[in-house]
Length: 388
Image (cartoon, one colour):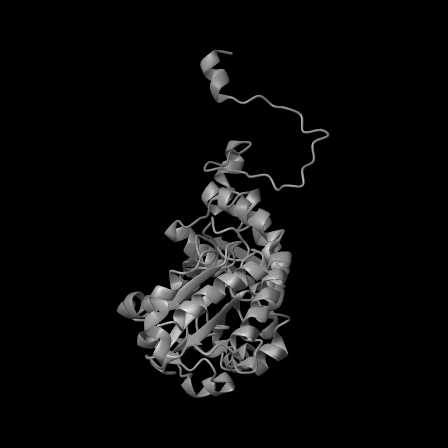
């Protein structure tokens, strides 16, 4: 064999005696076939078969299977981000003339998707009060095909009555999808409460280290899985096995990370209630949080993300006070090892459940730093906030 050929053709080595706890990272664009007949009939391998790297490798399928098991579903598809999970779901089930209902606290890019992309293609949307519960029946008409949920809201933390909304939707033949990123399947399982599509931004708790972008959609209905796969196929959307490998590594510690950060976050939330500059604390485990009774009924615990509302007389000091932080980093997203803080402006995007524009909103994500040092850092922010 010529050296040029040796450079291309890899030798076969024995795998006997080799067993690793880590999931192998299988990278591929081309999938090779044993003979011409297998290649000619590759489409018959079905949606779960291996036909081309874009459509999955054993690495991505392992992550899909693990998420499916955690959610109690039948199938999961991976997409490049949490927002992509929302968009792919809506594109898969909505057509011109249809309508989707979205909650007023929805992740802003979802509202943009509805207003700036779907609407121009003949798909309408309406915004509803996230605390509407079974009252959503009054908003459903013949054109309504999908109700979107996000519980709790990732900024203002309203907890939705997912079970009630899903029950009403199912009775009217309407599909439901829930962004479950705040809770993860460890704290809440949307499919078990009647939802059709369970969405996760794996970027956050599953990844766990602020170094990947990935999303997932889990379903119980195989017909819905087929619809999702068809959209991914025609749009040429796939995910990198390397991203999936990072997620597979991160998911192994997700349980202990959420448990630890959740405990610290709740402790901080309770302490912050007595701070003079804080008007109220938005943490689903606190009775003062909108939808707390639903949280207490349906969730097995709280995660690391919550918000504080700053009294109007202190809001102008927020930018300066943020500069006094040493451990909390200013940034979006959450679920990583580093604690994050983010000032948020939600008033302009609210259309149904108004937000007082003179109040400040600051979201915190608690990481894995030593809790006492984190509290000292937060105290510096609070002291600066009230020193003006």
